[in-house]
Each structure stands twice: as structure tokens, then as C-alpha cells.
Amino acid sequence: MEDLINRIVAATGLDPQSAREAVGIILGFFQKHAPQEAFAEFVNAIPGAQQAMAASAEAPARGGGLMGALGGLMGGLGGGAGGLMALASQLSGKGLDMGQMKAVGQEIFTYAEERVGPEKAREVIRAIPGVGQMM
Image 1: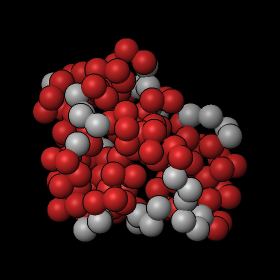
Image 2: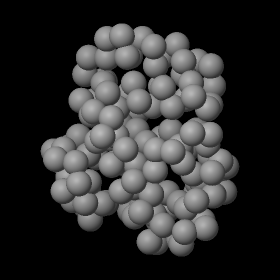
Image 3: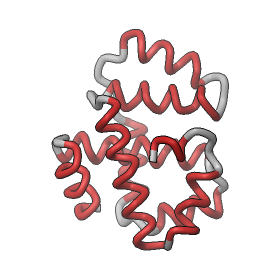
């Protein structure tokens, strides 16, 4: 996990704790929306991923405001755009801007792709509508 966190910190300027929380949030989103078999291989390729997901599920968001309310409302609609709005809201609540959100997602995807291969990693991304545009 430290290798991934260091890559995210270098790409985004986030501090290591924020990077770790963002990884946990994004992987938690994948866990909810991707096929479990594909996700299991994807997440098992990232050492410490389970701990990051557990920690992010327990950590309260900072702020949120209108984005938090809108994301919560849209998240209740299920996957697709609503799910992505909820994900963006959670990451925004942790202080990430849209550029940082995209960079974190890209680093996670690249890291997993290097470990499980492009096809396996893309299987997770293709299963969630709209995520491919963010990666």
C-alpha cells in the first residue's frame, strides 16, 4: 500500500493520510458496484486495501455542504451517475478536488493493472457505468 500511497501523493499533492482515505473510499465504491469475483482479484492485488476500505468506512467526512447533500440524495438512486455523485461527494468531503479525484482513481487503476493485468483490471472498471471516463 505504501508504494501506491507514495504514487498518489506525488501525482496529487495530497498528504499520505488523505491519499489513504481516498483509496479506501474508491475501493469501497468498487466493492459495492463491481462483480465480486473481478473485484476480489483487483483488491487482492493491492496490499493493505482491505484495511484502507475499513478505515475509510469509519472516518467521518470533513464538511460536505451542498455536494454532500446532493451526493447522498443521488447515491440513494443506486449505481451509475448517482453512485458516482455519491463517490465524488465523499471524496470532496475529504478535501479532494475533481482533478485529485481523477488522479487518485487513475493511480489505483494503473497500480492494479500492473499486478493483475489490463484485462482483469478493466473488468472492474467496465462493470461500473461512468467510471471508465474517470480513469
